[in-house]
Image (cartoon, rainbow, N blue to C red):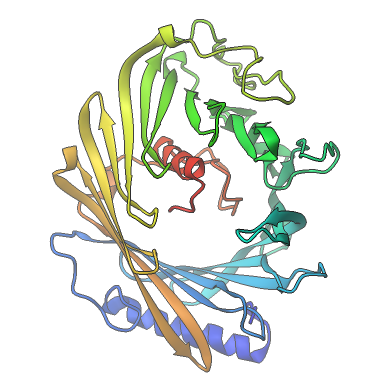
Length: 459
């Protein structure tokens, strides 16, 4: 069942009553129905989120998230978002596909009433492909790739922001140069419609693995709006080198970050990747890198990145306008170490700086590999900084079956006095593709890089 506020009477009933039930339960604790005891030592909630999932089709074959409710530190409902789904129209497949076509965002006023403030619209493209399964059978499959996302103001239905995703033309085994490969984006551009200015940009280039076995990212660049709001500027960029042998793992990269008008904020890292016996990235070690052979950004002119990809196609990453020079590698700075369980879930993540452990995070999963507990320790791992607990419940709300995912964040220190990981210059509340790093912090990007390198859906 796909529904939105203001739709049919049944959906309106669910909207009105469910908000009342959840808002009332917010003051009794973290749980939707029964409140667990407060976590010992916690100063209080930092946030709480409840995601409701149900069947979005009448045949009950497609279970997905239809609504999210966000509560503030006082336990009051503050934001509600509702997803509307539609069946994709392509035929010839046994399985029906549904995608989100609209998200309505409601802010809760002082009277506890949700007020529609903005909504998002999404456009997709069908990506049809074939593969050989484990039994040697040829399987026809289809996915839907996001092409465009739009943000509208609810009071006047005016388009405020949008982003467009462009996919590259890569050379598949059959030599077809004209068919876009929708697995691999080449650009994501956010635009503010009031003045037709870009607010953020993201680009990627790829190299094809021999024998048609896939692709590997060669370069990625990320731009955000500058402090003067006159243009976008380079925020960070990556250039990555891969092994020439199967499984063609990433070996190392140059990581370039520029975070302001002062050239002192610019730095390069050489990152070395190490893998465990299961082929997962176990360690990302960052070293200082003297970039005198790579053009640096000129203060006041940050529009272009330094990693220019002159090679249109080919393997491995080579004939470009730069090469990583090992003699330029300096002192080790930061290390991100990741441990996994037998199912491939991340169970521990350690952050090291100049040989000392600065913080680590432990993750716990249920029997279905769903994350249920996350603890982050700072000050060398001796001080519990925050804890995220996740619980799942099945509920029947006015005749409809729902799966509830309840996420509570407990704080063990004063968030108001802690450093702010958000980047205020990034674009607003736009839902972007999973591959997008725009607006993420340095740490979040490194974590997302780890997930992408392992080809896992993590956090």
